[in-house]
Amino acid sequence: MSSENVIDAGSINWDALRQAAVSAMQKAYAPYSKFPVGAAALTEDGRVVSGCNIENASYGVTLCAECSMISDLVMGGGGRLVAFDCVDSHMNTLMPCGRCRQLIYEHSVPGMLLNTVSGIRTIEQVLPDAFGPRDLEERS
Image 1 (cartoon, rainbow, N blue to C red):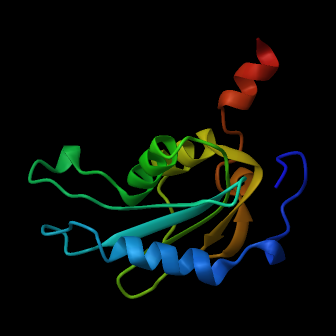
Image 2 (image 1 turned 30 degrees about the horizontal axis):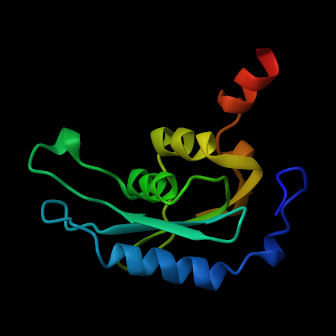
């Protein structure tokens, strides 16, 4: 998939992406909150990366599922994300927090699609006026 093109939501296998998020959620380490979360994303080259939340007794060092997913992306060779989904243990769609939206934006193609509680949205819709690597490239 080219980052130059608009991504067609119909070209994304949302069921497979959801299943990858569910599989990740099932590996979550959430002994404190009892709220396991799984996230999965599709890359430009067709790989699926995923992650789960990993809690810690010192809550400030807890890793969210999106952070874990980005770690999987980077460890797997990098790339850009084109589609994203996130779930809880009841298969409810979860919306990434602002911090995670920024983290996802850093590794997204323009127009990346997210399955949100409001339906399919672009990264620009869920993080309007974002600042990231594309801005640095344009302004350097």
